[in-house]
Image (tube, rainbow, N blue to C red; front, side, top):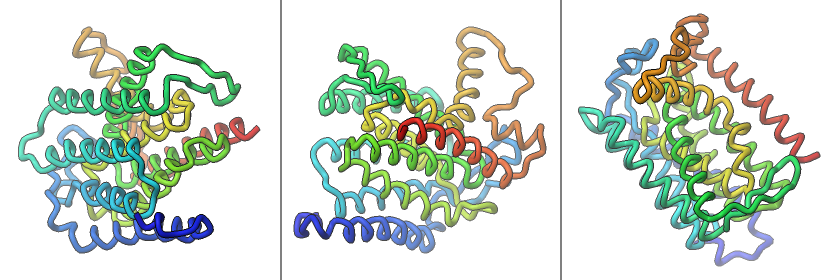
Length: 321
């Protein structure tokens, strides 16, 4: 790693170089290679889903690999972080292979793969960080039994992967919400002075997402696909657990969770318990506001982002108070 040859006084310059590298290389590779990515088939049941047909998708394959390369070159990488990088690539590849497939893998296969990744992530987090959880707003520390911690962590990781994936349906939406969420986590970690080595990875990941958003702003030229959304959801879950306050996920990822989570809840209740809820609400919610309320894509992104920013500002204020 480059930083092994530098003095601690050089870390600021190195950090800037890493962020710039992550952003610029993502932009460059997407600009020259987007036409080599698989093509989107359109979303049959999504509002205006046909508009995405024919666009390159699977951009997550590019920006996740750039993130991993930037981390290896510019960050402090120990055994724990190496495992997280491998898991992030695994989440990306499960999505990318589905992006490339002519016939979707189906919910069951993807759900089981997500579960395996979630279990490995939870066990790794427990092994390196223990099972203590801090309640951010009070400072109270709760010591969970290891098996309880792993169970809750699996739910968090699996849920984060899937709600983030479901929220990816409007140009720029999931990427923008992920930026707001990750920046909030970064600030909370900075205030609490926790996992300083990992917090730099958040900046690198955000830089890669921003490189992708350069091409995904309305009207988009390419899509992240499951390759990006699933890896993004995993990384958000890892970041919030590394902060030591995983329950903050409910607040820092509120809009992602609401947008994608309501659809998952609605479908699950109907499929497994034959319970119908929110019959007059289209899911994901970004389809509801566009179809039923007449919001444009740009309005949806900006208004959803505003809601999350306001919640995040409240979280930051309470965390810094």
